[in-house]
Length: 378
Image (cartoon, rainbow, N blue to C red):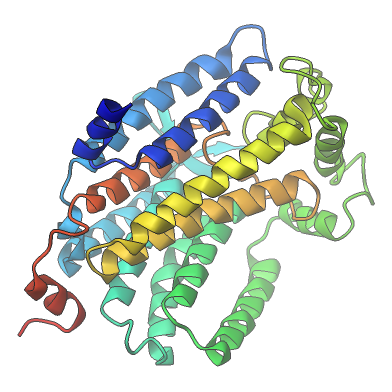
């Protein structure tokens, strides 16, 4: 046991974080394997997990202090926006959403990587302005940086990913020290933006999803069908679940997109309340370890990046679980570590790998580096 921990220490990895992730990945694979007889989702998800872990370990070996440079962050941000523009022009349309690029037979979703890019750019922006964050112009400028990718993603239209981008901005703005007065202003602006999106951007099916949120059982055979079947699946799991492979809602195709958007419902049906409780505990442990690693950051940039990563994962978790149990609208968001899909998996593990890379120099930095980070060059 000691030798295994020594390996984690040499690799600068958090053993508790890694060991908390593994059971969730396993649970997701086992649940997917029960959907079909040909192991379609299981085999492909296993490949994505292997690739993601390779990316995770490679990223943990990198010295990420170069991300503190404004020029580097600007290039990364510009690259993310370029990907979104390419999607808008030649992206693949799936379920009325133009959000995918196909490269060499592999489909990727640039909006997922843009979420990580927003964490980086907001961490950079607020790390140099944390003392004067009360100045509302910094709220406005950071909001402007966020609005461009938010609008491009919303126009796809991918309302779920746009909501995550907004949540990352809102969460990172709050942890940076926003005042309650400015917070109220943020919600006012958000309400106005939502009104504009409702009138000018949202497609009819997205409006129906939001209406379904208000009264999900009003149209069970129509717009409320997915929400109703998801709630049935969650409730039918009871205490111990029906058992892996015995979830009738997913196996009989009553539950749509059971491998991605509604995998929590499929998981709850087969694993029951006990399985859901373990899922919550493990996910909470992951978030706790991310926050602990963020608190050990060498500078404010590393700390804000870690907190942004925690906000990103929590936003996915809350919205996905909320829509599966009928208290939030159906947005089509995956939940990390359980849901099928490569783009989200790669994004999450890349973010965690960056955090582990930052962990390497969490205590090994020169006083002048901190002075330059917070105050500026002497």
